[in-house]
Picture (cartoon, rainbow, N blue to C red):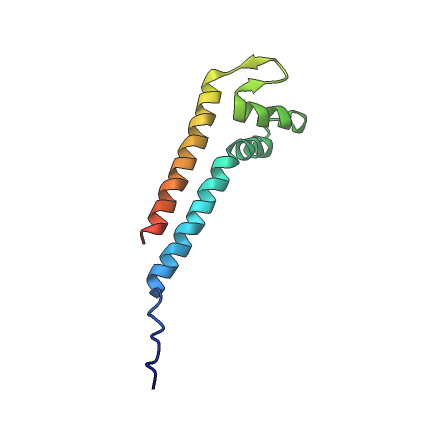
Length: 102
């Protein structure tokens, strides 16, 4: 008779759930990073700091630092946006490495 094949143990429940939770955190980090300009514009619309007519200009300014209505450029806002996006991508990359090593 042939020997029966061992099916293996699989992944432990705690490890499986840790991977799922970290994957969810990674998705949340990416979404918040990519949507930081839209989130700040929505917050300004809710508080009344930005009128609805200027929402598009506010989104452009949040990501690029360029204000289309006045034609001015805010270097600090552009650098802050680049650092937010870059930092979020690095954080998501590090979380991905953590997921692989759990």
